[in-house]
Amino acid sequence: MSTPSQRLKKTLPVPYTEHLPDIVRRNVGRWIDRRFHGAGIVEHISDTGDRLFTVKVGGTPNVRFSTETLRKFADIADRDGAHSLRFTRSGQVEIFATDLEGALRVKAEVEKIGFYVGGWGNTLWSIGSCTAYLTCTTAVIDAPSLTKVLYDHLVPYFTGEVALPSKLRINVGGCPTGCGGLVADIVLVGHYGAAPGFDPERIRLCLPTRADVLDTVVPEVQMVCPVNAIRSFAKADGSVGIEILEKKCIGCGRCKDVCDHITWDPEKTGVAVLVGGKSSNTGVGPTLARVVVPWIPARPPEFREAVAVVRKIIDVWRADAKPGERVADYLARVGIESLFDALHVPMTRWNRPTDLDTGFGVRQFLPR
Ligand code: SF4
Ligand code: SF4
Image 1 (tube, rainbow, N blue to C red):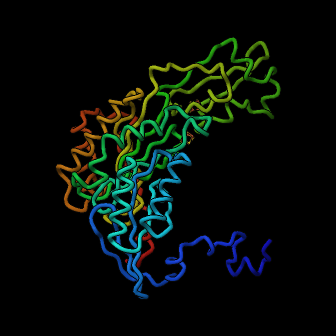
Image 2: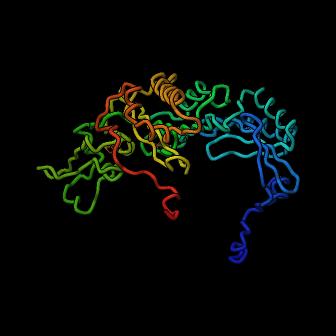
Image 3: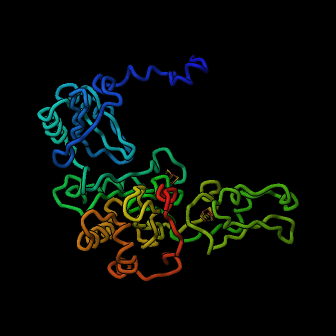
């Protein structure tokens, strides 16, 4: 157990530096330059003369690897690399090498076991996915499966075989909670497509038995709603009733998770598609993604409709964006309305752009 003074000196409870690769430990604070060697390989240059080559490998949806695959990566890193690797926050695997020849051998070996190398520069950097069904109780769609299908269709953009105007990030979330992240060029969010209904008799099993407790008790099914779309009230016979406010509901399904007598039409389950999010402070600065397609079906295993919309958005952006223009910067220049036209999506209250200024970057703190 570390003492407060050790903790102040950043002595972490785990022997942190022991786990760092030698070359990283030797060069703390010494990295001064970098060089790109085509899609997927970057050289980092230290003033000590050391070189570190990063080979970026497209990971699995939601970073789910079998231990067997992890051993294969570790074997490749030991045999051809610098005995080390890391996982990026968006789920890619970066394997390190100490020279370009080693990096090229690493690339060849990971490709042999079915992975792709890419995701640097003007390419598809990542498709981030929330966990959905594996560990989450509120999933509406199987986000990692949709992510896998998108990867299959978009591989040439990841490897750099087909050029993009700029970097592209895609995120997929299994429900409107949005753990997949709403800050990406294209975001897909699963939702139920409509407000739920409920069995008028059986719903009582999910509610307090007497309405006189409503002054002090909020029914769980009401409490979990993130947008206050469920209202409870006293009925004439002294029991508790609920009302679901359709216009407020975002179809997240949390009420369904706590009460089996909330009902859904599975045919309406789908995804919303949002565009123009980015955390980078370039161009128009950081932005949140905005809804363009409020609902399309989510039909596994092929998710054809969702894939078609994503491909169309990329096609429009590729054809029209200036070099270096992220989707958000492109839309700021041409107007998001042009994307509605290209996608043949009507503008409704569910996707109408607002005047909300989503710029929240460091730029606002700089002297004007
Ligand atoms: S976005 Fe929804 S489905 Fe995905 S992990 Fe979060 S709560 Fe679960
Ligand atoms: S919990 Fe979600 S699905 Fe249920 S009423 Fe509220 S917003 Fe709608």
